[in-house]
Image: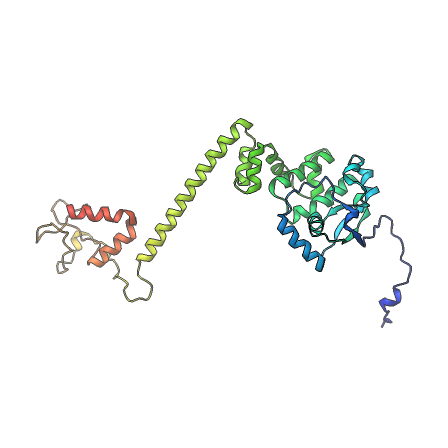
Length: 327
């Protein structure tokens, strides 16, 4: 049996360098030392009040650090961003909402994970910048589309972007399609007024046809919702009219009609509708030439009422009653 080794005894042991290995380092940075990258397609971070609340929470206990690279590593990739970065020593990769909240609440320092390997290439930086928000559904649909478009522009093709994101090419094309919408329709997608599935279908149309297509689709959606609501109301009315199971008021089963030659002569006649002369019986629609009526499929007023409830829409019952009274 092997001898146990204390992990503490290994603390000062030499660790062999592995080629390509980048060690993530937790550092404590002044908020003023950090700058946000202009590449982040996300532009909705919450209201001023929400950011202030998050900032106060971070002041008490920051549970999740932001992720940064050094200023020098970042500007090697995007030297044109030097003015936007200013004098900051580090640039954000992930955690811009936490960073903005800290600024809003005047939090002096932030915990950060320094991961320099994320600035090995522009594609690597964009992948790290976008993937967290894509996976967590933090982007709205248009922000997501802009993120995908940025990766396509960087890598040169939709196929390469799909491989970078480890997604299907259809996923890429569906999101890029939203950028073909008119700006005012993109705003409706952001707010949720225009469903993404409809937006994708009209994005291929010329700009001057998209608004009319959206209005037509919205009218159709409204009509479908009204029809569905009416159907649900009708189902509830029918269910409420039916006797509750086990209540003891369940109507007798409706007998199956029999041919005239098998009619039970001793059976009581069916109920006579109002206005029909006494001693007469209603003639069935399928009565034979000898005038003998087939037996009606009810044997009481209660079973007749149950037949009507089952087979006549509730909205048409008053009309049926009126017709029966007139006849």
